[in-house]
Length: 123
Image 1 (cartoon, one colour):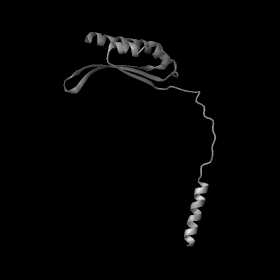
Image 2 (cartoon, one colour):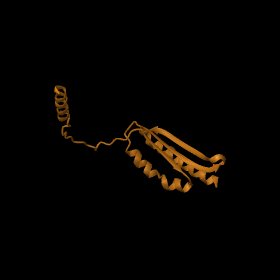
Image 3 (cartoon, helix red, strand yellow):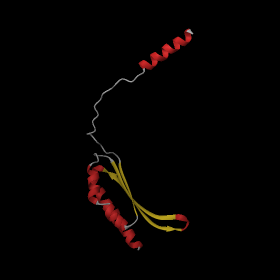
Image 4 (cartoon, helix red, strand yellow):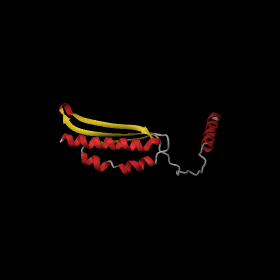
């Protein structure tokens, strides 16, 4: 019986002392930082390339990236279905650094143009 009372006393003491304290803290979310940006777009037509993927939107995103960060952009063009349930695809990928945004944007323009040419030549 003495063991039961001791066990109950220890259990009550543990539960009472084990309660979480009310902690208050201030959380700030003003310093948002984008690192290692990677964008991947999958399209099915030249019209989707032109409407989905605009250079001004890419420029806005790149302006949010910190200096000296790795960035990459990939566009995947879905093609026709071939035998066996396999779909033809063409992917273009550009990688770079945020310190050289101008040349990165130029390479994105080139792969955008190549994707549109892919769909125009397919027809």
